[in-house]
Length: 501
Image (cartoon, rainbow, N blue to C red):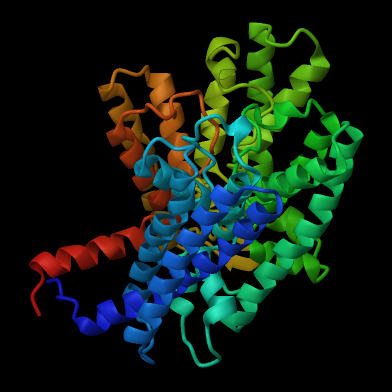
């Protein structure tokens, strides 16, 4: 039996969603100021309009829907889903008014791609985007990577607000420190520390590549947000290949890996527990899968003769292995080359790596290394049970921050989510086949959208069929929220239509 939501449910969901919308409105003031400084008055007006709408709606919801009631788990999950759907609604306004997007749907697609740290784009002529618009695209990645809900936790939550359900619903189930507000503050501190170091290193690398200081600083900031938040938006259409700099690529590699590491792991490493890097089930799983992906990719590239020398093969192959496995989506070559020059094995490994993704509780998407590791551990345990005497007690353990005993329900849950991910990947691929695209192209883009992988073979473009755009948007938000929050929101909708008290 479904229970029909009452006014209290909608009041709570609307109240906390409004806080997120308000935060997005404030964030738009930064690119608005940049637009004024660099002489982009039209774009500045667009940001002011978008910010005004978001701030007005956010403040109105806080005034009219205020309630001291605490969120239940289902309300928190539904609020998270609503927040992720609502934030791009307002963030798309300045994109549309800039004139670089064909429709509001394209602008919303771009905003969702930013907040969900996907990196797929429908912009017309990215090489000539106004700087403020390009900054906003990357800033959305930064906000989305840390979690739009974290904006509420750190900026708007009062000392008595109980919004832990929001934190759980976003997919970061494990609090790093006992207090959820302190947890959110730690996440921001980590992000800002990496921002200072990463941007400085990138700026120096770009200066060495011959860029002017101001231009280098702009590109460095954008590159950092794309790499650390595993977002994949690029300042130029040729992505990282535009810089033709091995040094820039070298700096980006650890930033992408850091973004794919969980925030709890960052916390414990910061506490001096270096052993977590080698003992953690997720870091081990990623190390093994990354090695397999890169090895097969290198063999595939060597067989097709894509690169005439070993150095470029290893350089481009390893960069793409990391960029795909961390679901960052930055690239050193054009995406069309995956189809025309890279053969079969290398693109297949890109899809596999994007599908697997990074660590749970990180900015990366995909199935997550924790689930893959648990499934492999469960399989290992079952094989041992078959081989050992029937009365033998088989216990399998794994290390994730602490040593834990593997339970049957954990393996079942991991396998269930694994299957849901495969269904999500398949859904977009089948629709691509319906529109007449080749299987490898349709599946590549579907996995890129759902996993937040962001690499593209060129299927995603402004004249893409509208239904495919909508389905990719649905894949983006479902993959980013990892099903449960979306299911909760759908449950509320169904309950309104059919539920009984």
